[in-house]
Length: 113
Length: 221
Ligand SMILES: Nc1nc2c(ncn2[C@@H]2O[C@H](COP(=O)(O)OP(=O)(O)O)[C@@H](O)[C@H]2O)c(=O)[nH]1
Ligand SMILES: [Mg+2]
Image 1 (tube, rainbow over the protein chains, first blue to last red):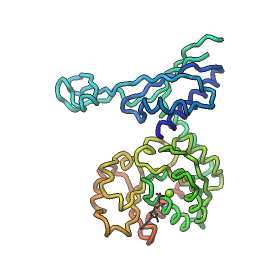
Image 2 (image 1 turned 135 degrees about the vertical axis):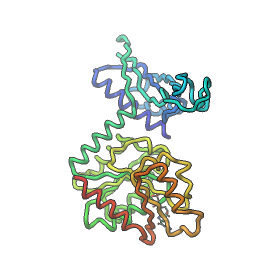
Image 3 (image 1 turned 30 degrees about the horizontal axis):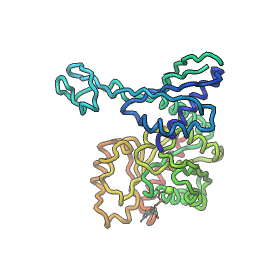
């Protein structure tokens, strides 16, 4: 599955950070996933336990913050969700927008000591 | 029990992948090895194209193949019999390779003495496109039976690759497939792409493909 490879990558990055900062235990990993990113939060959550099983992160919790696919209208500057509005500006009916969020896949932070 | 603190990481996973991919390219360059990432749907003719390529070029250069498409080693065996060194990755149901997995394949293959390495990516027209593997060039294989409307359905891959091999042209007469229509659709998505129609069965068109490969390998250092 697509998301499994992505979770392995997350664990790798977290593990690098943990070693670099000489941390001993990670309580939680917080991800930011855009609505237009390559990953679906529900699938990430589903494969996460399998990915961390038998690793140092077996007990680490996962939190996902979903970021909306927002565009800014190039005509009237209205900010709107391009998925629920099918790309059409709800204020002026324009279809010319600049994407301002939605493609992210970030590890926002970890809670650890 | 220590006290938990929040550590802000703000790390974009794709950027991390890009970093590993760039390191891979540097590493390959230092060994004068040229990596080509081959993507397509399952069964479109990746392995057959590689076998024809290896047989034709093995006396001119050392070729390696990283096989990731299937979990058994039939493809790895086929390219080895043709004269390449091969490793089989066990991707267990994954749908794409990222830079880290590719690097593992490269390290396992030991590329120091190789001039050219092909990565046979996992058969899928969607997921592999989003990941830089560390290859110098990306190519796609589209077979005639898949239809000339594929660029309309999967625009991303056609928009990204450097070369499109149109494979199995020997069976063209049995399908409603028009090369000109395909070319028009593909060029609309990617004006710099090189389209090479071939048949690994009859050998038609293979020369043009081999010439492209030789140019890349010659210009690598
Ligand atoms: N007629 C014809 N069949 C081909 C050609 N190239 C590959 N095939 C057949 O297509 C099938 C899949 O080919 P393969 O190279 O294994 O595809 P892969 O899954 O993309 O590696 C095999 O049965 C091949 O014999 C070709 O040029 N002409
Ligand atoms: Mg194959």
